Every structure is written in structure tokens, then in C-alpha cells.
Length: 160
Image (cartoon, one colour):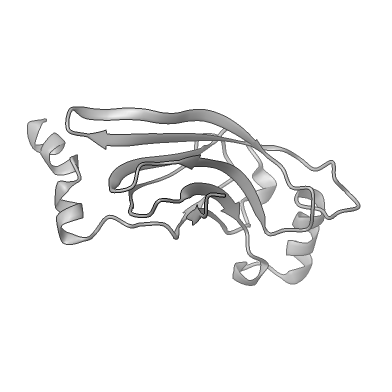
């Protein structure tokens, strides 16, 4: 147990440069509730951090016609602003010398009001020079989206 704690502490990843920094992408399956995408991430800039879902049409392995059907139903355009809302649970924990501290533990309700290949999940400030664990979890089943390649994107956004 102590060995696992020691290995998961994250200092080795920081020392060897294995901990990613934003702009970072990881796949997630929206088709079933409880699916998780998670990573450790190092913040090295004084910007706000955003988390979003991306389903770039150029990266899909399904036909254009099938993508069009899914897109019309779930992602729409400016004419169809009443689209399904995807609840996404986001947990952000900061690694500290004494353990971890929860920074964000909230369910976000993502929606889009325009034609877009993304859904904004959340935006928050994190301390520069610190390491965090970010976990994104699906809350509801959307079996029709099993064919869709979706990525969680973590990036920086300049503070105003």
C-alpha cells in the first residue's frame, strides 16, 4: 500500500517530464453512464484552464451520412437551439504534500447554441507550478453516440 502511494505521488513523473500540460486530449465514450477519462496534469502557465468535449467531424470513423444523422440530432445548428444536454461530472484534485485537495467536484450540463464540434464543460483557475488530477465522467447513457469518437480536451485560456 505504501509503495502504491509512493509511486502515485507524482514526483517521478514531474522529475522525468511525463506529466502532460495543457493542451491535452484523451478519448471518452459518451454512450454509457459511468465512463471515465482521467489524467494527471501539470499547470505551468498563469492562465485559466478549460475542459471541453470535442467530436471533430474530420476524426470520425463513420460515414459522412451517419455522422450527419448524429450531428443533426445531438449537435444541431443555430436554427435548432434546443438540443440534448449532456451532464458531465468533473472532478479536479490538487496534489499537495499532505495528500490531495478537491478543487472542483461538480456536474456540468453542456449544451451548444451554435454549429460547433465542441461542448464546453467548465473553466477554472488553477495554481501555476502545481500538479492536478482531472477526471471527467459521463452521467447518462447515450447509446446512439457509441459510434462517435469524442475527446476530452484540457487547455489554457488567457484570463481577461
